[in-house]
Image: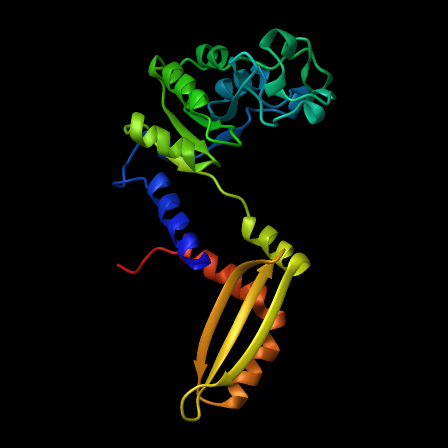
Length: 266
């Protein structure tokens, strides 16, 4: 039953991010992008108007991050909170835009800009990679960003870690180039398995000289993975069981990686 649900979730995930036909687009041909603007030099903070002006002046494409304030204003900022950039332990989603304007970036005079201000500043001079920052299915953010970009004349691409954003743009703005972002979550999952998983291995006679090997992984009393293998000898069964405790995490990670990321043979 667990494997069935995993397969269903994989199918839904693939359908949500499916790019459709392969497309050529000028935004994909740009070689250099300034990540969060051209920052670092001359004390310029990331995702600031100064960083975007410098990137535009240098002819670089710009990658930036968009999220919503408490009162629904689109602002450009990477982190969900202000601890790293402003030294304040507050979340952007908990502040109105007026409240957000009190703070400055990295000890400079630069404040967190609104997305529409950045669009006006760039004015189509260089292409944009617009990352939507969302931890849940944020339809409001998708709609606001789409409406702002409807009026924008420059090249841009939408990207997000959450597949819902890709699904929303696929459905409502199919002409927009989209990009699914990902992290090394397999390595994180591997750590969790090693730390919390209950791993068991057993075997029993099957038919003739064959044996059935039963391999299980459980997390917090919930079944995560179960594999039944038929082998031709007792020695093979013993060998597999002996190696399961050391190799179970690798097997699990490989299975998920193959199901999620490998392209089917054409």
